[in-house]
Length: 309
Image (cartoon, rainbow, N blue to C red):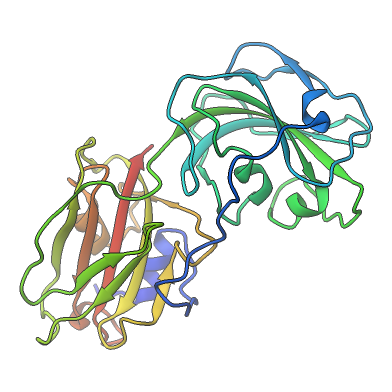
């Protein structure tokens, strides 16, 4: 069955309307967030991973994102670009009233990415923390409300308004593929990466392949992806005809990693075959020939395999 590029891209949760250059990246965070009174006055009790009892002395006002560590974990250190799974409870800084929580029901939440555009100030607050930590975070309401959709957080442009979150940092993944470089193959594009991991693609002098070809650019040493896993990835897709123009990319779509359910019935076979069996830490390039797409274009995908849920 033929599939267009938009069909492939929508399957992995991304719009195929981007036209940014491959060298661009999502908004990066500026380093470790500061501590301050707005966060340090918040207290929370209860076991890590369970919904805490929280005291928010209101009103709380802040002009910047502030963080206080309530429990210090000893797990992976969070850096810019890291996808992180969290549980959280959010409060109105003006009243101390609870706004929403993540559920604390044991189900795995989709990760948010430090430095990404989704939940941007909350995600940025995680940088320099460690897995196993519980944080109190104070953020400007206007900044948080501008970075979320489909939640109880309402638009708020009041410069004095704030939200307070108590966040449990449950799990973290790689920020980019960290595997060993593998020599290229004749007839396939070359991949180079920017310091943040975003790939650029250079075509060979030969014609495009007439069958799908998959090449391991970096060989990771983590667990192998199985057909039942949900992969955490960053990816870029371009056409063979114009590799300098990005057709779709998580790197340029706010820098936010996405998830791919490898068991999903609507997952294109081309994506599944490229990812199943690859190890976490790998960077995988797959070329999908024009004969497999209704648009009669050959597409090049580069996936960074960051982890599995």
